[in-house]
Length: 213
Image (cartoon, rainbow, N blue to C red):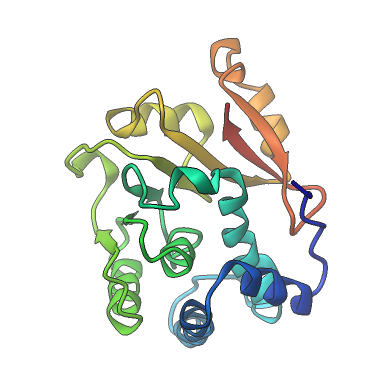
């Protein structure tokens, strides 16, 4: 399988997302971008400078997580929910829910205004596969997650401890950590380091994603 090339422009980022979407899903991604930019005028969901790079910094950056889940494991239906911790404005979880409508996605977010925005997006985009858990993870009733993702939730060791009730031996962790990925993994104890490796991000050659082995 050919490795996707580094994404460096908005046009490349949009084309990359289009390669992962059908026409209906792509229309929803575009609408989500509109909703996100509009809401960013009311609350700080993404940085102002990154608005001009929304496809590169946020949409493609989220969509690339699908590269780390073998398609054959979900082609006929996912073996369990994809849980996104600290979902914030829906990155990456809402993007995954849009691109893969047959995968059940659970967005965990405790901040009230972000929860309202997520619920609004789920309704506006008719995402029947997506559920918002508007509370702290510790209060969510445990279930077996197929994938656990988190863009900016907690340091690795704390994240693993909090997510343990939702994790099985088969659970796949996908943790975008930006340019601190390798450093954060190397700073953990050996028993954790051997469970993960760092994959390069497609949207930033210096950023990484901590992925379970």
